[in-house]
Image (cartoon, rainbow, N blue to C red):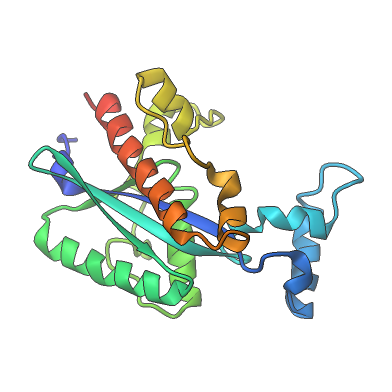
Length: 223
């Protein structure tokens, strides 16, 4: 496979939160559905649907996207843009519109994320379907085999075929001497910052740092 020019890659990261600030705010139907889901998440007798609800943000059916940050290399500089809002449909539509522009202007565009094939890409696609937003061609996996998908995953690059191995972006940054994107908050704190502090700007800043770190990690892996 020919080497992909880094200028042809759009690096992305998403930040997600549970669909409500706490379990008690769910309507009865969603409570019942989460109760069934949480049975498979429980690891000890102290776990219950309410305490486990803080994990809901990692499931597209029970969470939502509050920020998508995208980054590219242009003239050897990193350029970033973020789509963030309390209105998920609005930010997803803006991202979809820009993806259509990117695919027209950049030949053979690829999307790159850390653990993107397992999390970021399917999460975005599912939330677009829930919000009834047409899936941009580059994200549409229907009728494509895995080798046709224009997705790059830095965690997969680091696995080297080892399917059981998980390595965080923060750990790779430490290994390669890249400034950590977790110098303010990390992913576990995003829901609190969103619901308790109502600070989308802080979440956006953190998401953009993740994208910058992702680009630097990709460059180390693809040197």
